[in-house]
Image (tube, rainbow, N blue to C red; front, side, top):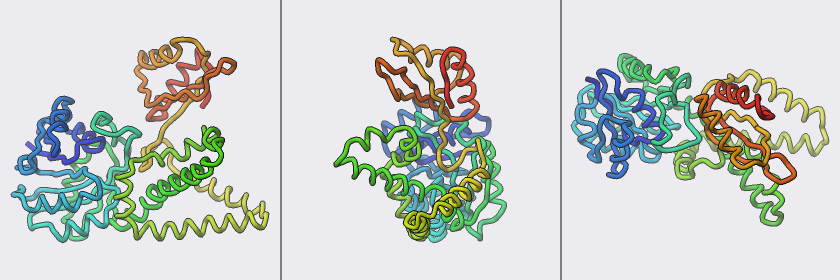
Length: 362
């Protein structure tokens, strides 16, 4: 029987647990210092058993997943090294920064144990164990960042275990990972927050900014609503990479300032052209480090019960609705519903189904 211990059984840890829960030859134990959280895990049947006792959780564990915030990873590794772990135990994490924890673990790791950094590049707009799903990692990239002296046999052993997630396992150097993820995830979060705060400052003297900042502005800045404490730890942890990226970003913005000052229309158009050309080559319909939402818009009359009718149609067709928003609803204007789904297939099915009775727009 292979024992898997998971610390921090939220969205990420809970989804990992569900990939193994109930399968032959696996026992999944969850740990939380909060007794109420332990009871919730058991009630939701996410793990085989749960405990507030760290030593009990890791006793005989073959694999330990640290799904705690980035800022707590080093503390947890140090605590684990004070416990009698099973020889050959593999410790891994799910943080979005890898160099610091990989180096820290190497400094504290005792002989007979292995640390292999990990980063499943998938998520959800929802949080907590309530949002956990055994399908979260399917077709997503799962990055492993083993130290150079980690035996390949141990990396292969963890890779084999992770095959149950149906993710695509990729092996990358820890610092290279931080450079890439810093550019495609951490920097965009900073830009989104800065942009929203810039508009917020304008709105203090003119509330029309907030009233008109709907549709596209809200969509492109969605990640500015990410959990502050988590992102505080990530950005501080990856500060060296981000400082370089922010300097490069300032250079890109300076280029636009110069083009606009010079009224250089051709130069502006060229920037959009080369950006569009590169963006068109990006993979579509694949899970990535930034959570995708797939939206359709439905024009609906202002009738009582209309939203219930639409959600019932989707539910009866077993189409999972991720989010719903009323964009417009006035007496003289049809209401517009924005319906969000977790993948393109369900968005397409919903569009076809609802299009038989309503005006649907992509």
